Structures are given as C-alpha cells and as structure tokens.
Image 1 (cartoon, rainbow, N blue to C red):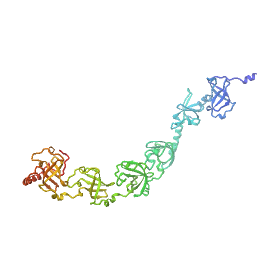
Image 2 (tube, helix red, strand yellow):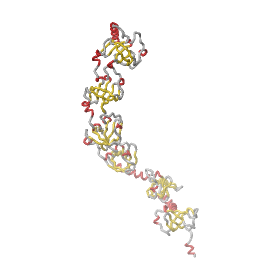
Image 3 (tube, rainbow, N blue to C red):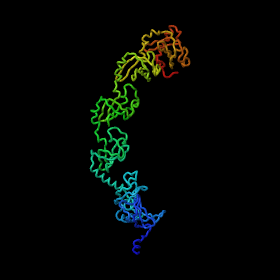
Image 4 (tube, helix red, strand yellow):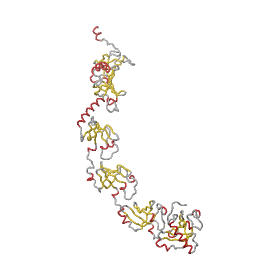
Length: 547
C-alpha cells in the first residue's frame, strides 16, 4: 500500500508554474495532456515545433495558466513553459545587435510574432526593405533576425529582418561596385518606375535606367517598356564609384537602328509604317522599331487644304510614304504621303494654257482678290485689278460673292509655286479702246447713282462705265452735303464735259445739261482744274468714308 501511494503522489497544481503533463491523445489540431486534475488540458499544434516528434504516453513540461476555465478545463501552454525556461537562457546568449534564428508564429497587430525560444515582436516595417502587403505568407517560415531591443522588465524583445537584408545588400553592393564596369550586361529586377525612368535592383546594387535609354524610339512613360517586379537584362553605361551610382541602358542591348539608316531607307524609297503621334505641324510615322519619320502637313496632299493632320490621319493608322530626306546626325527622316500620287500641278500648263477661257466657283475672297476653284485642289486667283476695265475695285466683294460661278481668262501659270492668275475683265474687250463709240463731249446721258463720296457721286452708264459728277457740278447753288439732295439709286440726267483716256475717267455735269457750246467749253476747262485739287479723286477712287 505504501509503494502504491508513493507511485501516485500527486504534483502540486499551482497557477503560474511549470508542471508536468502526460500526452494522452494527439488530435488533428491539438494535443491532449493529463496533468492529474479533474479534466485534461488541450494545447494547439502551433505551440510545437514538430508535432510528429510527440508520442502518446510521453511526459512534457507545460505552463499552468489556470486550473479551470469557464468550462472547468485547465488552461495550459507548452510554449509558455518553454519561454519561461528559456528567458534567462536567451538573455545570457543574446544581446541587442546579435543575430538569432526564429520561426514566425503568427500575424499580430502591426507585425509578426517570432519565436526565438521566447516570443519576440517583428514590426511590419522591419520585415523587408519594401513593407509587404500580405503578412500571412511569412507564418511558419524560419529566418535569421537581428535583435533591436530587449526590455527585461516587460520581458519583451523586438527584432528586425530588414536590417539584416540591408546589411547583406550593402555588402553585395560594395562587392558589385568593384566588379561592374561600363559595357557589362546584368540581369535585375525592376523595383519601381517614375516619370523619368526606372530603378533596377542588380542583386543588391540599385541602378537607374533613364527613360531616354530604354528605347531607340519614342516612349512617353517608362511603363511602356518595363513593369515593377519584372526581370530584365540591362547594360552598364556608367559607374560612379564615389557616389555608388550606376547608370543603366536597355536600348544599348540592341544595335542602333540609325547606324545604317541611309542604306535601309534611301531617299525616294517607298516605306510603310504606323502613325504614332500627331502634332500641329505634321504626323510621326514609325517605319521601324526606334525609327520615326515626320510627314509635314504640307506633304500630305497635293490638292486638299489641310489645316491639321487629324483631317487625314489618326494614331494607329498603317500608312505608306516616300522618303524625302535624312538627317542622320539629328536622327530625323522627312517623309511625304502626297508623293505616292502624281502631282496634278504637273498637268496644269496642259489643262489650263495661257489665254484659255475657264469657269469656276468663287471659293474665297481676300482683300486683294478672289480665289476661283477650277477643280478639286486647283485654284486660280483673280486680282481686283483684273475684275473690271472701267471700275476701280477696292474689294472683290464689290463684284463677287463666295460661291458665285464666274468665267475668266488664264493670264499666267506658275506650276512650281502652284499659282494660276486669272482675269475676269479679259472676257470682254476694253471699252476705253473705243470710248468715242459710246460717249462724246457734250452728250447728254442718263444713269443711276451707284456711289456717293465726299467730293461727288458716281453714275453708272452704259457698257459698265462710270461717270463722276463732282460736287461742284451738281447745281448752280453750293452743295454742302450730297446726301441732302441725292441718294444711291437716284436716276439723274447729266452732260459729258470731260473724257480722259489716260486716266480712264468721264466727267459729268448736271448743272450743264442746258449749257450752250461756250458755257460747256468753260465748264470743261474748269473741270480740268480740279485735277490738282486735293478734294478731287480720279474716276473709281471710292472712299471708305461715305457721307
């Protein structure tokens, strides 16, 4: 009986102490332990390094948190027993700055819980160089850590994995800086991109890949060429050993397409490419990777009046063009699209010979003349001086409106400068060559007032000839303002008192309608004296100021 009692001696069960327990069952997620209490305790698998090493019936030391929880079961922990046993051992072996190995136990607020014999905390900012987005991937993994801080009173340890990585990278960087030289090729991982380039990790040594060294062609952002996390091969362009900086190149991996550009794309060659950019003055066509040519807006069509490139092209269009010129040093190629077709101006002299009568539509009016469209893209210009034999035209709108159909004579053709000069008055003979057939001194004429000026008014006569009634020839009485006695459209009767072939003008007088020969001669002489008068203007000098 004494021997049985000795064998069944019950260990004292005191909360907060380490006691022995016997494994009675290993379940799927927990280990059941008998501690000699009314109920058995359960310990999660996560507290053991390797559950497979445990055996039913074997004894282990565990920490008694509580004798009974709300369900009457003891609360025990294998991990806490190990930590309690190991705390002083840990303090004796490690200090701040030392390197320890540990296993990631779980994810907690702000970081990870690491077991290094005792629990320690790994802040999220100290996990890696770039703070990871997913902490779950580290749970269960074993790493080396650097001890940052030990708080003995709170029994708290803070560790870092990042500092170890940075130290390792620094060592690698120093080693790589000694090894690399311009011209070397290396593989690296794109760490991040900016507007001006990308930073590439060459296994510990960061290098800058500038946007201008990514492609021989045009790119607007580094993301067009590389992506964060992508592995790429680059060339070492420059090494600054003092500042520990490395400049990298991607395009240098391939040959420069401009090296033999004149052989590949000689002037006059027909090429195909894709529209990659539109600007105000033209379109850029990629004819080979890294090679772009400019089609200037003036080289897009022989005949169409293009004000912006988007009227003919859009980005992404596949087009053909002709090489017009190459500036190799500046890496520029001039292209033309209109050269794919025959120049219609080459046939202008044949189609519109000087002296030919043509018909067209008034397309536009300017201050100096009217542009008449003869065919699509082919205009002729009628200068104001070639609109009438008898009238001085200050603006083409006095005779023409936009859209009018007009007849004209071809006066001159300049195919090189793409100009055709036309004349409307040349359709008919110059009436002034035979003016005596129409008007003689002393003739009494009738007509309508067509224009009023400060110095007189013009009367529209037959054969589209105007006569001028000077303000002094309106009445025997002094006229201050013509508008007080006459207006445009009035019918008047007057007498021809002057015919000047040189100046192409006819002088009229209303007050001399009933004069005899002597009076008429005297009035004609008086009319001649007006030539030097500053208030007098030659026939057709239409003033802008009308009163």
